[in-house]
Image 1: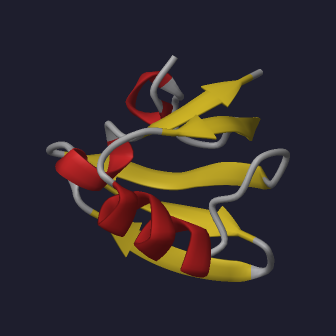
Image 2: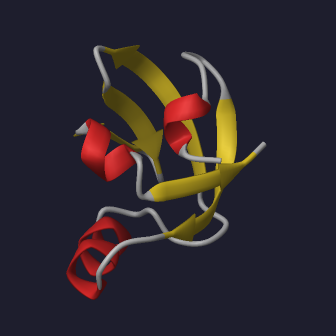
Length: 71
């Protein structure tokens, strides 16, 4: 399921990053790699603030739709 389905305060693990190679590379550079734990800090209006690998990041709805997670 995409990280968009995770509620505020919940944690999940990255299962897969989809999209073209440039998007996958960029999200990987930000820390969204297979098995990385992510926590949704804030989800508002489609955009999200997430914690991944001890960093808090703001991601757009489009980026979030490419990050598949497992609870």
